[in-house]
Structures are given as structure tokens and as C-alpha cells.
Amino acid sequence: MGPTIHDVARVANTSKSTVSRYLNGQKVKKETQEALEKAILELNYHRNENARRLVMSRTNTIGIVVDNISNIFYSGIIRGIEEVANRKGYNCIFYSGTSNAKREASFLHLLFEGQVDGIILLSFQKRDRKDLEQMLDMPYPLALIGDHGEMDGLFSVDIDNASGVSDLVTYLHGLGHRKVAYISGPPHMGPIKYRFKGLEQTMKELQMECKPEWIVTSDWSNQGGYEAMKELLKQDGYTAVIASNDETAIGALRAMQEAGIQVPEQMSIVGFDDITQASWVYPPLTTVKQPLKQVGLTAAEGLFAQIEGLDEVKRTSQLYKPTLIVRQSCTKL
Image (cartoon, rainbow, N blue to C red; front, top):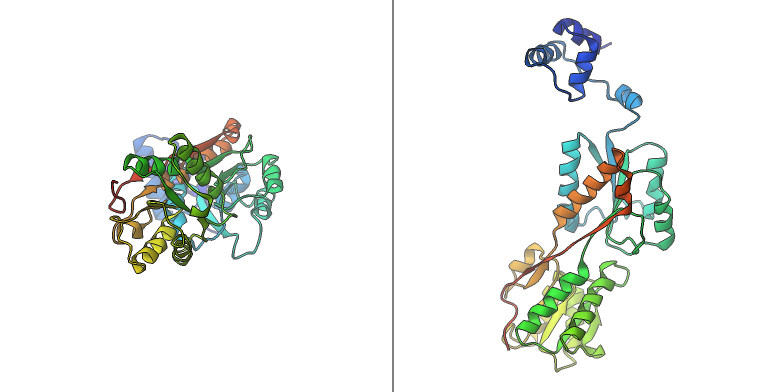
């Protein structure tokens, strides 16, 4: 049997309760701390985390369920989550919904079974209404990143997608563009509805034109953007293209260049996301940048507030506004 807390107290010439306070992060006198650190090193003492978890009724672990854990787009969000978890002394366990071929809600059993102290569900796909209703009834710490179905009573963090597209439309309007085409994304993705809403509302307010034949769909890939732009090139009359993500915009840019269209001299184009490649294509892409790390930080802070008993956090939702990044893919008319 390894050294115990009693052994540490004996060697450090202090009480068991003082050792316990120190191990749980509470302050002790400087000379006591030095004696405890020396005793722990001398005895090669390691705290029994399993016993501690039983006493504390906590696992000191949170679960993060990601719809596709290989998606590098989520790395900024995950960094924010891990920063808060590390500060709180918690471990993170990651689960991939895609690799397990499971719906998000199926991972809620981790809370029922006490395997984790809280769960963050990370997905930008549309969520099923029944799943959201089940989450609403959860008596455990839970945070959503992405779609929350506009349902009150869930703690959620998301990007203000409508605002991001609105800023792009306003920017193009300021350059003199009045007729704009739009490349949408896959309908199963949560942001699509709000990005189109931002487009529609702002163009109406500014008295701009976007004909139905100037709206096409993509799968948010480079190839999808390339093919969508090929369809748009069968139409004319517009002076700028808004792509609903950067990968789509980069594919569309390639299609324009292959067709002999000079960008931005003959056609302007903007994207959404500000991925790394957006600043490396030619011309560099004007887009909007999502504050992904801040989304992760806020989601984790909200989850830990619930773990620590601040239940009112569960009734809030927060949106973070993207930032317009102006580069060289647009011109003034």
C-alpha cells in the first residue's frame, strides 16, 4: 500500500485536515506549505483520485461531444473549452458523434450514469426538436454550442450568423454594389437559415436586388463552390457574389478565374469564416471572422457555473458577432 494522507501529515508534523486543505487548493501558512511539499516529495505521495471522487461526488471530468472530431474548424472552440477546464482543474474527454454513428442526445447517458460532471454538445448542424426538448428537461449541467432551436431554457452559445452576412451586404453596398448573387450551404446546417435571413433583411433595407436565379446551393466545400459558381455563370446582371463560407468562396473564385473573369476588377466576391486559406488565395478574400475561441470559453464557463450550482445560467443563450475582415477581393463601382 502506498503512502497515505496520514503519512504526509506525520512527516510534515501537521494535521490530516491541514494536508487535506492544502491538497484541495486552500491556503496554508508558508512554512506549512514548504513542509508539506517536502513530505509529499519524500514519500512520493499521489492523491487517490478515485476515493476523492467518491467523497466529492464528482469526477472532475467534463465530456465534449463533437459532431465530427476531425473537423479542424472546431480547434479554436476546443482551445477555449480546454483553457477553462484546465483553470478549474478538470479533465476533458472527447466523443465523436460521427465515429459512433449516434445522435447527440444518446450521449446524455454519460450524465445519468455519473461518468462526467457536465457535457458540452458541439455541433453546427440543425438539432432535432425532440432532442432539444429532452435536453431542456435535463437536471444536469449541459451546454450547447450551435443551434438551440430558438428554445428558451437551454444554455447555448452560437455565432450571430445573420449579423455576419448583414455586415458583408452593407460593405458591398458601400462599394456601390446593388445586384448581388448568393451561394448558400447545405440545408442540414444550422447557420444556413440565419445567414440567409441576414442577407434577405439587409438587402431589403438597402433596396438591393438578389433575383431567385442568382441564389444557388453548395455543400460548403471547394468543389461545391466551384460547381455552384459554374451555375451562376449561366446568369448575368450581378456585380458581386456572397458565398456562405470561405471554402465555397475559394471554389467559386477558381471558377471565375477559369472563365476569364478578373476578380475584383470585373466581379467582387466575399466569404464567411476567415479560414487560414482566405488570406492566401489570390486575391486575398474579404470575409468575416468568427470568434471561435470566445465561443468555447463562454460555453465552458457557463457549464462550470452550472456544476458549481448557479442554475440560472441554464436559461441563457449568447450570440457572438463576427468581425468584418477587408482584403482585396472586392472593388468599388
